[in-house]
Image (cartoon, rainbow, N blue to C red; front, side):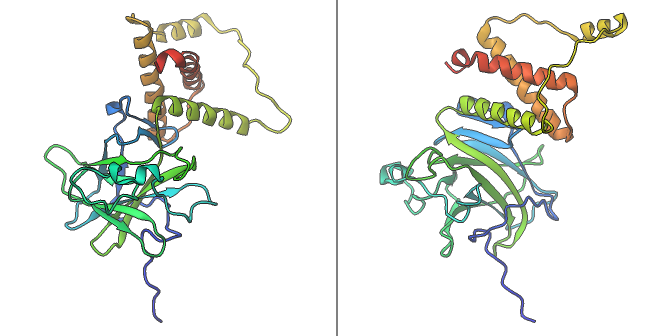
Length: 296
């Protein structure tokens, strides 16, 4: 019985299911290196980044076969728009936006690799744009290989992505485009990563709270029951105080603790304890209440 050809990794109905595969393929974002140009939300698995900002994404396998590539293709997340290719808007498609000294054969591409050896492709059937980069072996002292990415159009551009949610599909492939691993990451290319990250995380928490309420019930604040002196003393001992120079430093510290707790919960694949949940809630409320100062 003749076998059907293997679908292209950039076909119209490409697979988006995460698949580590034989080589245990992984993608990592080092949130500790984030700055004003990009932020990563561990609770949303989403990157918030400025247009044209460069971010080094880390890739890992249990072995690094010779001649393998990393491919990145942007897709729309919602079902209605998934079949359409993600392209730059008319403004960001002009020749003035092409990198200096490089051909404009990737002027429609949203996802770029900041390296002269990057290969830009367009699927003739689906019209999906993708970029491939040869996967080197890791350098001494690390198990990861870094590849610099940047993005050339915003999610809010009307003649392009037009506010539709997007994600990047990363595939580990050989030279014939056979897929050996797949990972994905949500992305928002925007003007203010901090603002959008905080807003979406807050909306996500509200949705989760509402989703967990049984029908006919409402959210209630737990009663403050009497506790034994020993219990009160233990909780008092767990509270730590440190001096901070000013409100800006204070808010940066809260932002770090907020993201660190979310990252830890995701890494340990568990739900927060009642105390952790309360801390996360308080951190978020403080950041939102001071957002005008913090984003200044």
